[in-house]
Length: 319
Ligand SMILES: [Zn+2]
Image (tube, rainbow, N blue to C red; front, side, top):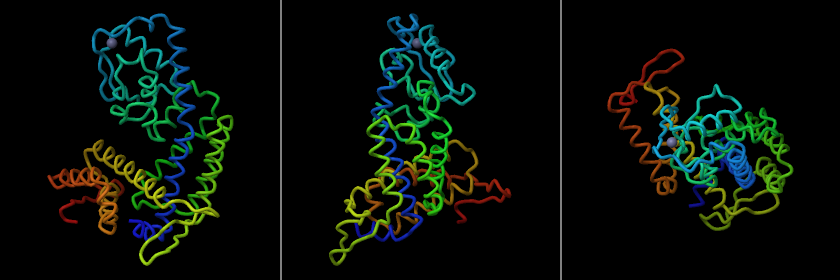
């Protein structure tokens, strides 16, 4: 398994991409506990300051869908109003469908999901959310007013660069720039011990050269990680997590557009090529491979793809 990983890590751009993803996962891990505590405080504050919200429960099984939540009962309507009141940018698209409104009085987490990007409906608990969800929550909820938002936005942009990278690669220059931005973001959270510790690790990951040490004939025991050795499995797991998120983003992007963009088609081909050359990845990414086949099927059933730059048309079957 790890010998294939070592070959992949010989590709500088791909290695940078994994390192950057690894750093994102560290940012999430170090902020989780803190954000969770803040959202509990926020939820308590709403309940304490608005007596309407203390009413027992929603009797009408209110449901929201996508960006729509029109038919709310009076209790859910009041929650909706309060949640919007504390949104830092009410002109943003709000994914009400992320949550189940009748659960708002009970769970802070269900309220937090309103401030997150699409796709949170099936996620239970803050510990299961990705860094994009966490950063968007910090950016959109005024409970986090002490944070300089621009620094959060910069990391959200970097995260989007990673997820929309057609080649699953980033340059060393990009990685250096990103490392600086992480440093600036984590300065906002220096009062959290986890953030302080993560900062050190992140700076090491980003600046180190993951040398591959082959100790057996075809096995890699460990990847050299600055002066210490890091288990190759840690890197492999970070890689898997990043690929899963990348595939999920690709699926969202395709679903949202009636016409497929050429970059999505190219991304699809990058993923196929990666799987072709790395059987170990194919064997563990079952769900993602299935998603890929479904996407392809959809394309082959007649969907035309258009290059938005010059209007050139593509058809997958001709590729
Ligand atoms: Zn209701």
